[in-house]
Length: 169
Image 1 (tube, helix red, strand yellow):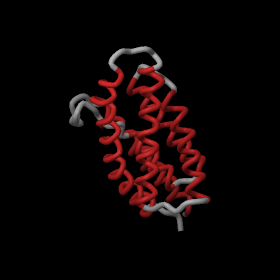
Image 2 (cartoon, one colour):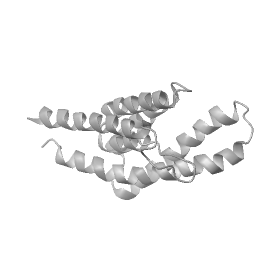
Image 3 (cartoon, rainbow, N blue to C red):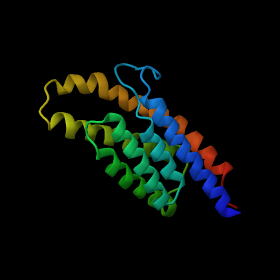
């Protein structure tokens, strides 16, 4: 009986990741606010990792990272590696050392979202020698960070509901 709820929860997470990828990659479906579109799979992987143990969290981070890399198409591997590692660490930290609550989830989602998007910008925009980096960061990446974080709050409550409703007793 316990495995049935775990399998249903993992199926629901997988379906969520697939639907968010379709939503994120469909042109003109999500509005672009102040020059940036959200990376919906980033907070989805983070919020799933808050509730799950480290190995399943790592695989959901890996799946989200692969889809993010495929959606961008220019730098394959960045989000795959970083999200798998970050989700593994989040699963381990929240399983052993921290309690999942709204404040912790919001803080971790904000820091990790901003950190990964800024690292992506640093590695693939600044270090590649493109001009106008400051203008491009302010006009596109800041809004992308804020938009992604705000979507992460909604995804936290969605994944919390999925986790609680399909919890093994």
